[in-house]
Image (cartoon, rainbow, N blue to C red; front, side):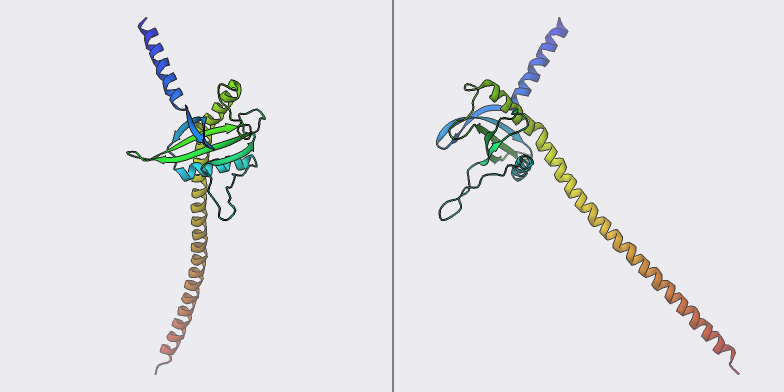
Length: 207
């Protein structure tokens, strides 16, 4: 009985922790409140944006750019239109990401609100389409727990490869310099030997 109670408590704690990874929320898009999913990550804000661009670039979708008649205006969201993401079973959606940094003790957290729509003013929600919303949650969880970490590893690998190539280049330079120094030492030793022979001959000719 005691083991059963402990198992139930552990299950409830696990469920609570799992649900805390993604939170349903609301944000304003085009002056209207839209249903959104909210996640956090310890990745810096710029890395999150780069990771999202990297992911959607793999789908051949570029972020939207806001432009005015006179000056360029930055969009309040990182927006990707008509993207068929891995979890959406062939359905193309528009994705809006509101990304910010939350200062806190220790490492800062990056906050991410995600909204999706089937086009202009046709935003998805659990009320309008539970199945699509469930797939949208799966996509959000995949980005949070998997793709962001993929990007972190790839970025570290790129940095490490760059450093490795620098080391290899330095080693090549050192190897070439070693060959030059060995040749120089060999030549100088030969010159010294010749000079020593000449010196010995001259010494032997003294009266």
